[in-house]
Amino acid sequence: MTEPTGIAGLQNLGNTCYLNSVLQALIHTEALKEYFKQNNVPETLKLYLLSKVVNGVWSSNNTAVPISFVTHFFTGVKDKRIIYSQNDVTEALAWIFEIVTKESPKKKYHPKYDGATLDYLKDKKKKRKGFKENYFNSYIIYKYTKFIIDDLEKNESPLSIFRGSQVSILTCMKCNKIKYTFSAFDILPLDITDLTLNGCLENSNQSEVLDGENRWFCKNCNQKVPVKKEMTLYGTGEYVIIQLKRFTAEGEKITALVAFDESIILNGVAFELYSICNHHGGVKSGHYTNYSLVAGKWYSFDDESVQQVKNIVTANAYVLFYKKK
Image 1 (spheres, rainbow, N blue to C red):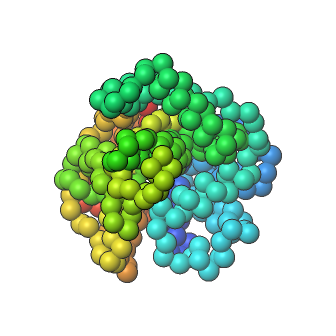
Image 2: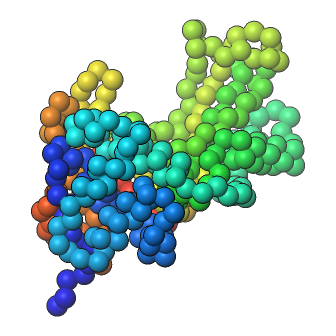
């Protein structure tokens, strides 16, 4: 039986295992693969370098040597000495997102809102005094539209498929005035508050009271007051990247096994897992690998080494890549 394409390793060029792990996840992102297949020669050098890596792995199962990508893609953003140092996969993702966004052409963006999340917010709002459904609908859509137009990058970045949004809800505990603030994310970071991914997702929506030095200035009360803060996932793209926050501010690593399913529900929408960035080792020294789904089978990508793997749920799982079903 002929082996499927897409199972090529990437040569480690010296402390670049973190980059290889990220690249394998992007290579196995179907929408990105199709984008570069249709736009084989992008307009800019840096997009071309990324497309060359993606297209190269899908055209041959020989080990790829991404020397041109590593040498030239990060020019003007990161010093080569940093690239060849030990870095975190989320840092690499942030660099790649930044560069691809800058290199992509601009376009007009037409905002959409997530009806399921709107219903969730409406249910919460109904419990508050003075709720007017029509007013709330118009208000929340207006706020989200303004957020999209004012704050999101308006471009044709092929990585915009990962972009999602959250809404912060601050409620004055004295007059019940509410403030909504939207923010965009390319990576959804999750505190490890449970031993399951679903539990961590549920806990991320828990409210907290900000008091003392963290009091919020309420214009309605004209003074600093305690507030209740809620952070809710508002919308997602076709793809979502979830980071399990294994590294603490105290310089320690959380090594607990966080169980996750290959299928999850976010805002009422089903997503399926297709790639995982793993971190092995401790804080000061470690190694990154990748698990990706190819032709219905999971493969382990450890730099140049590629092999099938059956158990993908491990305590090394760090960044999870999901796509809409």
